[in-house]
Length: 384
Image (tube, rainbow, N blue to C red; front, top):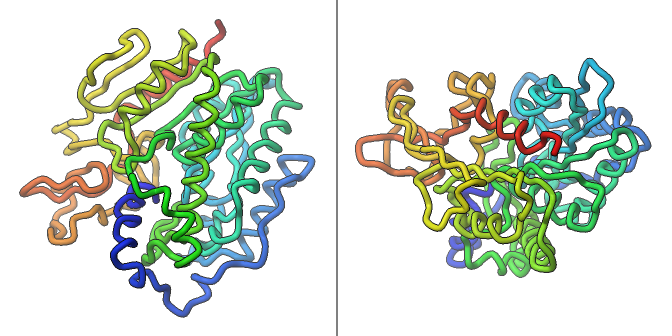
């Protein structure tokens, strides 16, 4: 969702009337939001699965699969857990984005929970319904619920979810540390401040055919405004004080919607714990805090990978949906005038907007360094 936000906001300033939805229930919001303050996580999962089943605009014949890929979930280790982590997804995505990391961490002895932000999991029009407080209260409730069950609590977030958990953790000293994947602290779009105004003038930033089970393809302007609000909140929180607990941050140099350099600078100045690590996918940037920053090349010619995208870090190469041989390929990648290749084996992969003469780039949706990522998680979360 976010990789197109910069382009879409800029385009709206010139041609807002283009984002007019078809006359379809899929583009009409539901009535109300699902409950999130259940006393047990099991009840939360059960009631949200029922909510999704009743209100989702299904895009395939496999309704059970779509519910599974959008509902909150929990994984528990075989042994009695002492540590837990709560994951929060990004704008337009789903709890399932953490499925591969969750599997690995549960095997390592963690309780792993991945929650559903209100407005997600059903249809993109439902992003018109929540406000920032709904998202913040959902995070706070489930962080406290997890704290009541384990001795050590970590939070993990992708993109917008990274903003939400970082803001929460700055006010809750009981959070032991953070895992942040492409956190949306610093957007690259200078027009993002206009999204609250746009949301009063037009309902939609982008209208697309929905063909991606765990991720909305269309975006209401209110959803873009909510992301902007999380940016303001997290930047204010990080300005007030340094964050001195362990943190892992990953970022692609070629992220199409964020400012990677600003994120790296914030890590080096604001995230001060010596155990913290920053994984940078791309070419070596200048002025590194070398002991805490790992640089991994994102130009992997043998794998036909030119750059890393906003989203790919989360997924293992063998993920059945987004993996190297997964069932879903995101062909739409900002290359409107370039024909699709007849042979998928000639596809190249990269960030949104990656254009190279003679090559068609689909979105990169898996992480060739996924095992390295798991090792970094274990290092940062290890006992001091």
